[in-house]
Length: 261
Image 1 (spheres, rainbow, N blue to C red):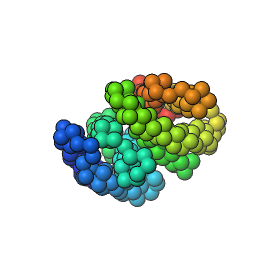
Image 2 (cartoon, one colour):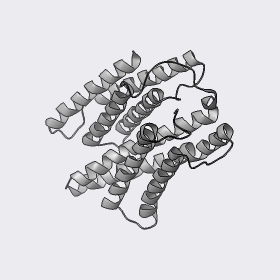
Image 3 (cartoon, one colour):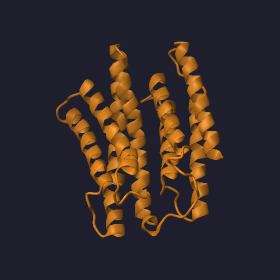
Image 4 (cartoon, rainbow, N blue to C red):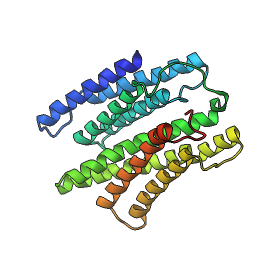
């Protein structure tokens, strides 16, 4: 129920954002960030409620993962909106809002059954909790980077491009170490505890590594090669495409040790 209310609030937020975009005002609408915060709180409440029901942290199936992922995206949007240094522009905010809506739409579809049930023994590890939660927090920042990259490529104004590039870089610079810790470090520790090996070249492990290399190339191109602009935008888009495939593509198209996650 709470997740459904959150979904409705996000949709209302998107409508509000569109109205202000059509009015072509320089400022963002005054309501959407509050709706984002409320929706994020409801989604986190859903995670807590399900955790109490199963007596474990509820991030072990597709529905629970998408609920947590969406909540992180919305919370990050709220933080970007209220702080002054990295204030996100209305179109980027709208794009990220749409991404949160799409994630919750998948969560409410037959692809992600919402039945509350305890995870299998292999998933009952707090190394897994660190692995999943940190991975999705990092990927939530990648959502902002992805939308910023599209905005950068779409606009012509130099000042708007500069602002989009700044948001693009900061979001990935923050998300990258969090994703690295969750997807690779804690993922390997959990894999050793669950399967007896830190690395098994499982499809999800492989695609997570490909995703990590892409974002590593993004940071390398900016910090070492001093390449910005279109190079950064395209690498961000490619990296996020790999992020989505690592989660959805591997889950539904490929089989492996992560097939139950």
